[in-house]
Each structure stands twice: as C-alpha cells, then as structure tokens.
Image (tube, rainbow, N blue to C red):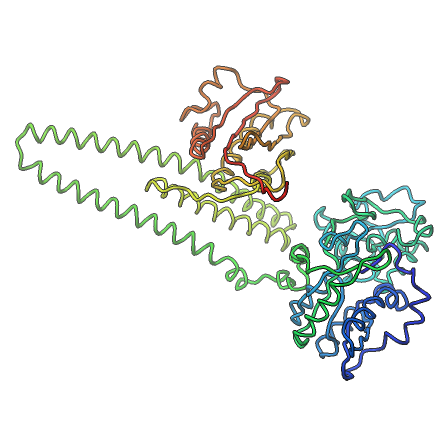
Length: 599
C-alpha cells in the first residue's frame, strides 16, 4: 500500500473524490471502462486518497478510458474477480498468492513505495502495545494474552506475525488467551489496544509512524534490525503489493496499463511502480503455515504421503536392487573365472599348479583387502544418515508415548527420514562411482549456502545440538565449484568431532564456530571447538587410516575428509588456536570466484 508512513494525509482530497472515483461493484462494464479492485484496509476515504493519482495517471495515459475503483474486502474481491467484474486487482501479497492459485491472477507490476523500501523489501508486521506497559518485551510473552487483529486473512495484519510465532513455538489458537478479530479498517486494532480490550495488537509496519504524535501512545514489541527500512517491524520484510491482471483481462489492455504505470514519475507523496518482484517468500510462508494454496498439507492421507514421497522410496529401492544385482553378477563372474583357472591348472604339472595356486591365493587376498576397505568406508559413511533416521524414528515413538505427537511433528520427522534415506542412497551411488573410477559431480555454489546446509543437517542429527555460530566474511556474490555433498560430508564430520570434544565440558565451552574466509583465489572453512584440544603426538597421526582416539570409532573419518579435500585440489589441516583453547580444523579449497559486475 503506498505512503503508509502517512496514510491519512489526503483525507480532504479523498472525500471530494469519493463520489467520482469509487462506486460499489457492478456486473455491467461501460464502454472504455477499466475496473480496478483494491483491498480496503485503511477505510474508504483514506483508500481513495491513496489510489487517486494512479487512476488519474492511467486515464491521462490512455485517452478514452475511464478508470473505476472498487474498494473491497478479501471475500468481496474474490467474488468480484471470480464473476468477471474486475479487470485488475491491487491487494496484499498473501491475498494475491491465494487468487493466483484459485483464479489465475497474474502480477504485472509491484508497488515501489520508496523512502527506504524496495519492491522486494517493503512489508512487515508489528505487534504493538500501549507505551505505558513495561511488560511484553518479546513475542513469546504473548502466551496467555489477548491479541487483536483485523482477521486471519490479513497479511500484514496477522499472517506475517503468525509465521514468526510458528518459528518460536507459539500458536495463536492454543497459546493466546483470546484472538480478537476486529475487521477493517486497521485502526480498530489500535482502538482495542488503547481501550484495554486487548493486551496487544497486530498491525502493518509503518502504521504507527504514519500517525505522528498519536503513534507515540504505542510501542512495538521485539523490533528487528532491518537495514534502511524506515519503520519498526516485528517480522522479516516481504514484497510490496502487486497489480495483477485476471484470466479474462485482455492482454493488450494489461500491457498498456503496465507501460502507463511504469512511466509514472516518483515524487515525495506518491510512489511509483516497478517490474514484478519475486513472491517466493510469500509462498514459503504459506507453505509453512499450511494456508492458502497449501492448505491441503494440513490433512495428509496415506495416498497423499505415497504420492509425495514415492520417487524417493522407489529410487532407494532401485539403487539397492541394482547394488544386489551387481554383487550377484560379480560373484557369478568370479566363480566362472575361478572354474576356468581351476580347469587350466588341472592340465599342468604340479609345479605350475602350485605356482598358479599361490598366485590365485595372492589375488584372492588382494580382493579381500579392497573389499574390506570398501566395506569399512561404506559403514562409516552410512552411519550418520542411519543415526539421523533412528533419532527421528525414536522421537516419533517418544512423542506418541507422551501424547504429544502432532501432524506437524510427524510431517517434519518423516520428511527428514526421507531426506536422510535419499542421502544414504547418494552415498551408495558415490561408493559405486568410486569403485568404477568415476569422477564426482561439481557445481558452483555459494560458500554460505554450503556451510549453512551442513549446519542445519548437523543440528537435525543431534538431540541436544550445541550452538553453532556461522561467521561469513566472504562476498555474497562469491561462488566455488565443488562436489556439494562431499564437502558437506567433510563439514559434518568436523562438526561431529568438535561436538564430541566439547560435549562433556561446561555449557560455556560447548558452542562451536564455523568461519568462512576468502584467501588468495581460494576459500578457507574453519571449524573450531573449545574442547580439551589434542597433543602433538595425536596430531601427527590424526589423518592416518584406522587411527582413532574414540572407543567406538573406525578411524576412517578424517582420512576420508583429507582425501576429499585433496581430490578438490585443497587440503585439510588441524591446528591449535592462538588462545590455546580447543582445536581448529581448516578446509582450504581453491577456485573461489566473484561476479565482476558486482564490483
């Protein structure tokens, strides 16, 4: 919505234009008439004042066309769009995503409000309380409180806060003493808070700032640090409102309107329009909340689960079957070869038979050695995904026994189990590739993304995962070409070793640190713990195969990690930090590249 920092500035103008530009929805279209539906969340007068410049600009740019503004709520806009009574809609991103899925709405432009807000980072939500309240400093303290909101369909007025609350384990339905839905305009929320009917209220970010002195009667709970954003917000930022056409909107009309609005000159009072922003973050939010187009996720059935995960189960089964068939074929060929050699040896004299028997025995021992090394590697590599699968399965059992098994928890656990099964399948594929001397697949990946995925996976494997700080000093546009899965296995192994070295120590020495630093044409990934450290004798043998200081270890982990590092043209070393506390492993990889256009 434009100009949210001063939403009532044109009240007088709006009132004068109300009878000219706004009218109730009608089914009949006058010749040369363009009908635009806009979500009315501030009240009729303020809404007309906000959008009047847009209407006049379209009429000036398209002679012979008359623009009519339809002020609607969520249900009214959905009904009018479905009945073909609108040519375009202007609504919040959440409502647009719903209409996109239901009615085929297609965004053609995104609002550019300016004043420190970009089309991709413009909307937030704020939890407000009266300024004279000394409690309610964090969102988790909303448990047991009365909270006012415009309604569940409000994007900035409810859904953004709902998403943040879901991340910290607070449910509006279960944890609030009362969720009061007061409806539009949003000023009703502030009235409920000011009168004491509600302990807190949910409004769009920048609403308080637009009230001037009146806004000082309220305070924003848990404000976030959002660079360059001019208002206090309790949530991350999302894209601004879109202008969208509908299935029945003539494409030529949509093109003309888009060209006309892109030519608007920005000034201090009225924002302009930009090319459509990426609304994937809105989809991600709705998927997490299981609302809108993703409401079907709330009711998983056996058929839905089978349709959702059958490719992974089928893929794992095919890989396993292929491995079995490969093993059977190898055994069959070995037996055939052994039989042929036995037949040939029988035809020769005793000395030749003895010599060839000795050679065959030596070949057999070599095969057993290779098979033993391969089996040890496979067991070590599969241990982590199998342990994760076991942890999540046990978690489901414990939650079921305690009566705390929810659909969300079950879905999360089964999703992670499927992901780990896929990972185990990938491990088997790489073992086969190694046996056939195939090269691993490499791709250009962002270092922060690479390390972040490894940290998330590691924390999901641990029942009581330690705090892990990711310190990224690499440029955001940097990329490095590596085998993503292999490097993440190295990081997982280093994180597990760091965790084992410090988990028995006091809590202040258990946190781990992962640091990303650019070197001369390369990348250093450091994993540090604050454990007891290692002595020089142990460090000298640290990367030897089958050397381990753990009672249940195979001694292959660090040896495999160093092999992966060397296969990438890098190296893996272990050092004692300058403060002599703990151990720091450094994985050095060559080939870090940056986009020269971002200089």
